Length: 258
Image (tube, rainbow, N blue to C red; front, side, top):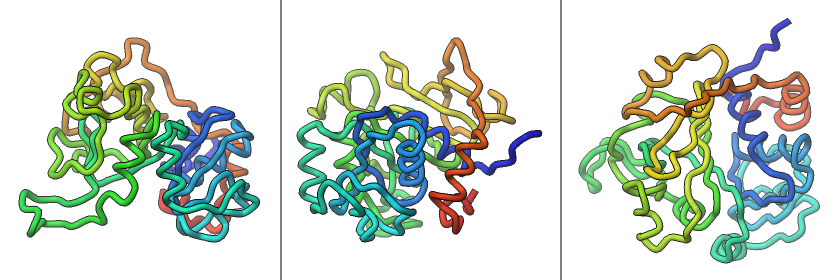
């Protein structure tokens, strides 16, 4: 019997599998927090979770509603401040981080500022960077969880809020950002992408259940690269879904959006 799940549940489960036991991960609320919690419960019990507002190493009892929620410091190593989190990033102590945005391009650069060509009078104004620029600039591996369509995956950003691999190749290293940092995984409802080692262009490494190469390319505004040995993304397991639904997000605050 096939286990039923929605797109958000799939993306959270796939993201959770990417997190390594003993590593550290800077998260926000929503899907990234759910992925970190699932990883901690199933795959990475010694995952160190950090929240932008200052919670370091909590054992989350349930889904917090913001990065400053008191639950983000539940049984934590430290109830710190934003300064402590950004200091840890500057010191190279944060392995993974999760980000989102309105637009992303082939090099993993992100726009979360505006849509339009006039910054003073944009067609749409978004919240902006928050800590996203800092996290993406300084953490070792940046991951994005996002639905995929042509409006989000664009050839040219309307505004560059958060750096990925900039113009590709060695341009990120040449900009002065820490060598070896940058985008790592883009996890969508259709596929999982990494980045080519040389060109730093986005590359599809696995297809999600029910989607084809044509589906993925047609819902992307630029030409994607493809892994030679393309994999099939494993669907969520019954155990992943049980923990996600019963322990992490029983009120469906996040997974109900799928």
